Image (cartoon, rainbow, N blue to C red):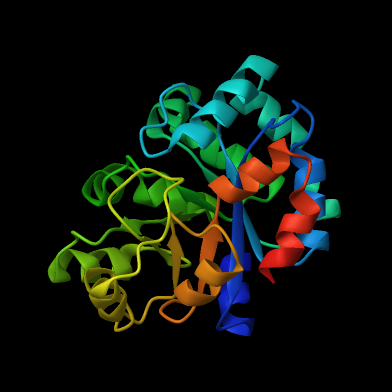
Length: 249
């Protein structure tokens, strides 16, 4: 069974997923960051593939990605760093990145390397559902790699249901139509959106704007859990990652 499915089967609420860019803050920190997160209670980790033009990300993650690239991080090196990761890490691992990086690497080679190192799923914000289903779904299935799709407040009912049906593992619910790093806005419009997504049967996690225990607990009222990215990246920068994670749970 895919580790993402196993997680959602055994834990229905308060799932904590953490995002950080590979190779940040130092080139060889990827594995130690994963070990720290598993040790301190993260349920799942999204490893960012550093990219020069991360359009969905705010200034903090853009700066972290640039630093990782300046450190020398590249996709082939990331797979080398992860080659033995399943000897010590048993929580689900996803890679999150942009299609251009994967396309240039070679889609089938990328999926094959994901399978080799034990990656469970991918989050690719700029790969549309239709293109995925027409051109790449069979390859993802061949290598057992899940494709997690994203929905946002502007997603209409029909498309929300299509995304929920097609997304594997869980549906990534973007809290607002903005880049990462903002704050979670709690108003009637936001709650109407969250109430709407409570009706879907596919497991879901809320991301964007989750920065502390309060916003994490609020998001968990509407979904199976939440994703913390920018706030963790800032904690890494300050060398306060362990204290930050403990403060979320």
